[in-house]
Length: 65
Image (cartoon, rainbow, N blue to C red; front, top):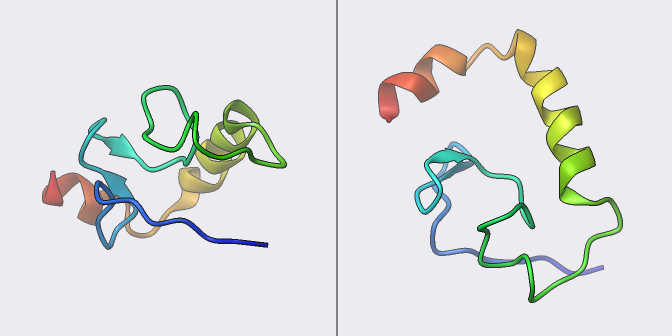
């Protein structure tokens, strides 16, 4: 198992390159062609969106943009 580092992510998991929440490997991500993921980005995106429905930090993230 390995980890990654991205110069475009901030402390709130926000991608400054794409101006959206970070989902490593999504279209436009700098990691999309460099690494492979066990779960494709589109499936991780759906599960992340489902979890963020009740996200207590949702308003805080909007203010930071």
